[in-house]
Image (cartoon, rainbow, N blue to C red; front, side, top):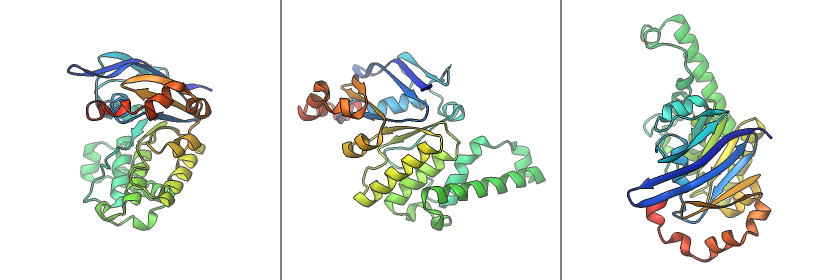
Length: 262
């Protein structure tokens, strides 16, 4: 399979704490790739480096053969990487449809003057963006809530809306940070189906998730972090048998610095 993303020796420090230490991994086009580990292992820190929120002290990220910019989230999105967040970050006072339209605007070709003057071309593009946003709401199964203010949606539907907004940026890689957190069994099963559909439709998925059962049944390959270091990378069946992984999860030491390196 073709490599889509390669992380090379990523190191990130916060003062005297090393949150990521020499982390390297490779994600292939078309797969669902999981990133797991005990609390405080560095998973979200890796996501924040990948998506431009943090600048690593060492290492580089290569996406589609080109080095990604660091510290510039808008350029990372433009390059083809979108993310959701562990703590949902929707525009709470905007409708579901408006939230997804906001995601589309990064791909808009209309310039500010044409939008201000409401030229025919700008109006046509806005109409297309509205149509596409509604299609994405249908895609994730919440089109009936198009005109509902996002803060009034159920927790599970807010999660789906955040995925729809991320997909609106037309990513090649969708990075999901704890998408099943707080979901009940029915919602989790629907999420699994949605992720499988997204992958089937050509978008590569990177998944951080504490639901080990979900990850093991959904991901093609996994990397495991512990104290900021990669301790395993393989198919789920092999990761489950890895002595270092078993020790990290069952030994309890992985939670010692949960607040520091999450």
